[in-house]
Image (cartoon, rainbow, N blue to C red; front, side, top):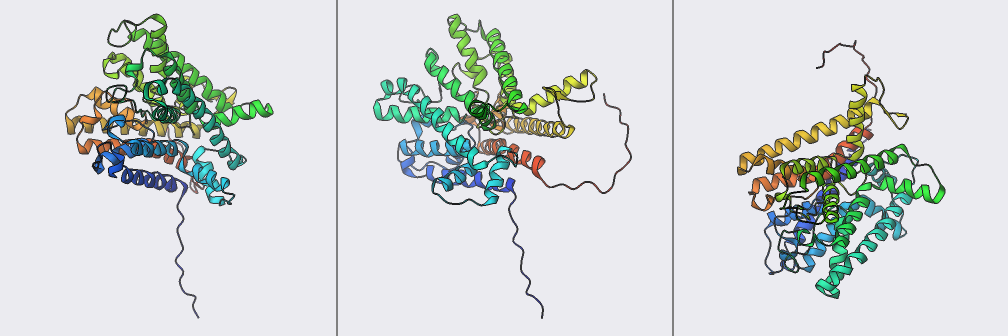
Length: 455
C-alpha cells in the first residue's frame, strides 16, 4: 500500500514577508484613499494618484503628486497618518505588539521575522525590544505633538490644531515629510518654507527627525546604558559618531555655500542662517521637510543634500538611505586601504571582510538603481539630469525632498518613482536580510587563488 503524495507547503522566507506585507498595506491604503470621503471635494481620486500617495506614505518618503493639505479630507489625512506610522515602525512589530497587548501568544516564526527586520541577535528578547519601541515612540511623538500644538492650535483652532500637531509629529519622527499646512496656513506644496522664521517649529522637527533616524537598536543600547549601566555596543558608538560628524559637517558646508544666497538664507540674521543650515543638514536624512526652498539652493548645496540623502539614517530606524553604518564601514575600509592596512578596525574592533563586501554590494546596487532611474526620467519626460537625479535620490532613499518635479511627471515616470520608493524602503531591507540571514553552506570545492591587477 502506497502512501498518498502529500504536497509540501512552502513557507515564505522573512524577506518575502517584508515585501508582501508592505505591498498589502500600500494596496489597502490606495483603495481607502479612492473613497469619495477621502478627498475634500468628495470626488473619487484616480488610482494612480492614490497609489503614489499610499506608496509614499507607507514607505515614509514624502513625495506627493497632490497637496496633502488641500486635496485630502480629514479622513484621507487620517489614512495617510496610519500608513506613515505603520510604515515607519514596521508592520511586523505592530503585529507582535498587538498580540502582546491582547494577551495572545505569538509564533516563533513571527519573533524570528521581526528580529531579522531589525537585525537583532538571537539573544535579544524581541518582545521586550518591541515594547520599548512603542513606549519610546509614544513618548517622543507625544512630546513632539504637544510642542507643535503651541503653534498649530492658535493657527488652526483647537480640534484641527490638535490633529495637525499629532500628524506632523508622527510624520517628522517617522521621517515621512508629509505636512497638512497647505491651503489653511500656507500655499500648496510649500512644506515649511513659510515657517522659516519660527525656531520652535524647526528645532522640534529637527529633534524628532534625528531621534527617528537614530534607530531602535541605538535606543535599546541607550536604554540599557541608563537603566543597567550596560556598556554601549560598538555599533551604537559608531552610529552616534558618524551621525554627529554628518550633522556638524553638513551644517557647516550648507552654511558656507548658502550664506550669501538671497534666495535662501542670504538675507537672514546670523542665528537664523545657522538654524536653517542645521535644518537643511537634518532633513535630507531622510525626512523631506523643506524650509528654504530646494529649487532656490545653489547647485553645490543640492549635491551636498543628495549625499546626505544617500547616507540616510541608521539601520533599524524609520529613516531610509544606504544607512550610516554601511557608508561608515566603506569609508573606514577605503581609509585602511589607502594606508596600506590589512585589517579594517572600528573602535579597536576588527570588521570582518564579509561585512565590507555586504556594504559595498548595497552601495553599488543603490547607486546603479538611482542613476538608471534618473536616466529613464530624462528620456521619458525630457527633464534636466540634475532634477531627475535629485528626485531619484529622494525616492530611493525615502526622503521626500523635491525640486517641484514629481507632480509634473507622466504616468510611466510616476510608476518608476513608486517602484523606487518601495524598493528603497523594502528592497534594501530585503537585500540586507538575504545577505545577513540566508543559510549558506561552505563551498565544497576550493579553487587556487588568482592575482588580478587593480588600478
